[in-house]
Image (cartoon, rainbow, N blue to C red):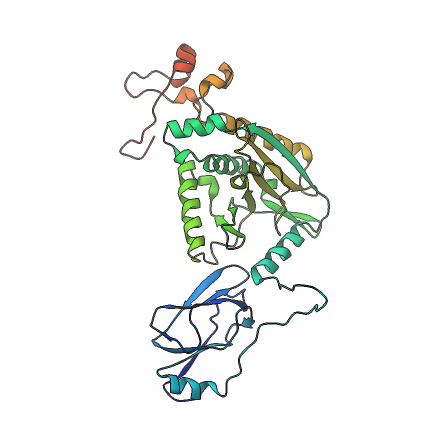
Length: 368
């Protein structure tokens, strides 16, 4: 090999992923690439990354699309000229994609590393074989209409649901735990895993300290995660460490489904919905490990969650006892008062009922 030619090896993306799959080459063999331009997409069990050219030169791939190779293996050869590329590549054997192992089948397609990791996590989560599921249902059209009228959260109900789930998890530690070796192991944090599948494979991304966030924070974080998912820019930190997973298929107009528990977790929460039906019905399903919690505990959790979500509906749809200000579901209304007239919000609602309304705002010191 000439001194001016060099081989680029598969990078060690993180300590847990020692293998990568060649997803796509951005250049043809023998083509010239400029420094910093994309060369190849690699997928690990956790994420998808794009490898850019270290310097300008002519490229020869050393592994075919679909090949699974180890960190440190030769990835591609780069040379300043085509002649030097041919000379340098003569002694390098190209790594081929695996051949089909079942010739009787009409078609063979090996699972990607990411899919293999997903299968392993779900197999572990379902290994107890005594999992159960509870569900609740409610109509969401009026809540969505109110959010649109108030220009809040872009009319998206998901941040409200994630917020209320995270709040409830603080007082229900059994949902952030897992069963192993005849013991229940409890996490000391609420790191919410949110499943995303925008056409590039299922990824469970982690929202840290979710119980400390507000609905607008969830809206911003899920938007950011979605954009980085599409750019293949999710990191190992984004994809690890969740203590409970939430998966939302309502965007596909699926109301009923059975979510599967991930490894080292005791439950998973599934959000379903169907915009094609009157009043936009929604469902929240919880699949849970009966070794960790009882059906009564899950039923109580779901009942409280539904009450909290419905508190965001317009006041005229609620009974007088339910007519609390929807954006203060956890606050004592007797502690909220008008800054101008000092009337307490609870007294204001008793006097004016459904016509009562106060506008929250942030003071200069950051309080609300």
